[in-house]
Length: 284
Image (cartoon, rainbow, N blue to C red; front, side, top):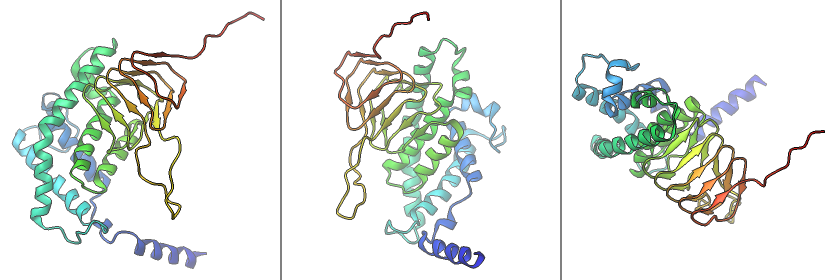
């Protein structure tokens, strides 16, 4: 048995990408995310930051440290087999990293709109700082917005690592390829799943347990599932209440309210109100 396990381990190592061992550990990924969080919300995190960054560091020093950490992951991700780059040059690494840094102002703008959306929809909030520091929605959206920007730069592996880390931290599973507009609100959030080809418009609010998933798959001649649009399209100003599953490439029209505990596999027109049938409660 021991020999067989050793043989399988050797085989698995040989079929894995040869440069996976270049990836820094998850602890370093956490440090990167903490640095980026401090850069994006310095007014909140520079005094209360849990990252290993001195409070005396300037904003520029924090950005420089975050840039160095980012380059570590970009270099390792670009070196993963299958993307045509065996040994990425410094210029290739810095081109991706610089393009990402250029997107930080837009990421900050989107995250601020997410904070405002949550603050406007939750009477339990006491301040913007509370939403940023305490709400899992902002933790997951910070990870997602960063990962989505890296995904758009066609960087392999790292975007998924970032969103899966957020999944572990919050219980909210958002694929980095999903498209999410501004002012996206999540209340509570545990158990939310947003699939790869989901498209979500602006000012959308969803509650815990919501699934935007695929209903079925198309398979190619080799029996492998085809990666094609298979998740819902949610238009602007839609609210989806807890534990509802919306499956397949269906469209939920703008300004609709979708009640809780529903299973939706058909399009919903704009300005709709969808809820369970009423029931009668009787004493026995």
